[in-house]
Amino acid sequence: MIGIRAVLFLLGVLLVATTLRSAVRTFILPRASNTLIARWVFRTVGAAFRWRAGKARSYEASDRAMELLAPIALLVLPAVWLVLVGLGYMGMYLGLGIASIEQAFSLSGSSLLTLGTMPPTGWFVTLLAFSEATIGLALIALLIAYLPTMYAAFSRREAAVAMLEVRAGSPPSAFTMLERYHRLHRLDKLGEVWTAWETWFADIEESHTSLAALVFFRSPQPHRSWVTAAGAVLDAASLTASTLDIPRDVQADLSIRAGYLALREIAAFFGIAYDPDPQPGGPISIGRGEYDAVCDHLAELGLPIKPDRDQAWRDFVGWRVNYDAVLLGLARLTLAPYAPWSSDRSAIGAGGPRPAA
Image (cartoon, rainbow, N blue to C red):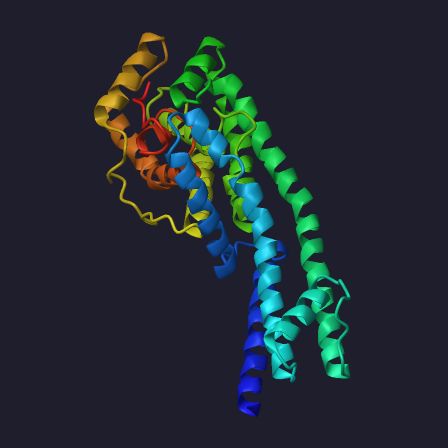
């Protein structure tokens, strides 16, 4: 009997310690930390919402089905932590001689939720009850403190996504962006965009791995998405660096590198497979015919296109291969709205993909 009680006590301690580790690494640790409990909660809640979205007959219905995924998962996560802490303390109380599972449950729930309906007896049991009450309050306080930080990061992300609509249209596309800058005679000012989005990519790399729920928070407007915005900017920078016959701006190169590194970090956090060292001529989801059609369209509008189209295509592939897989993977993960050269080829969403413009 003593051996069984010792095992119950140790298992309780282990469960509480594992739960606290998950909470600390999720809410406090300022770096990417994918804990088993948090991952299980988001996958389980996400599977339920994806099942519901899969029955939608339009993207708008699918978007409405997915809009509560992140908020509900955030509410479920602390509840799961509280349940696990309660179970862990039940094991400890049973290990200390509490007569029955029912009494251990009542004492654990009373202490965890600070109800005081069942006072503890004995100094060690009382000490455990006080520690359990402290943990319960701390978990709720962590969630409350976590929300302002998360919504501040969300606001920064969405401000840039909303501003991109002015430059790249809705849905955002690289060719629309280049076309508009050409019409405004501001191709020489594209460096301002690359600089701003290099900073944006660095911000989401930090925030969307340390505050992973942000990945699933959808934009206020259904047709916007941080994933498709990222894809439009990366493709615009790749086309500028590889295809447009204008003076080279290394800031475009830096922006592309910042972008694919950020998307890779987020993709790795969620287990999305990609090649960390792709070859310059590796396969991408964009065909040569699509690329040539865009180049012809831009040339008709008067944009300067490099005369060696074959070399320009190879250079474009060399840039795109770095972020092609992770961009499509994140579009699938978030059920991103339609946008050319990103979510349109990731086989997601109600109604299926649509052809690129």
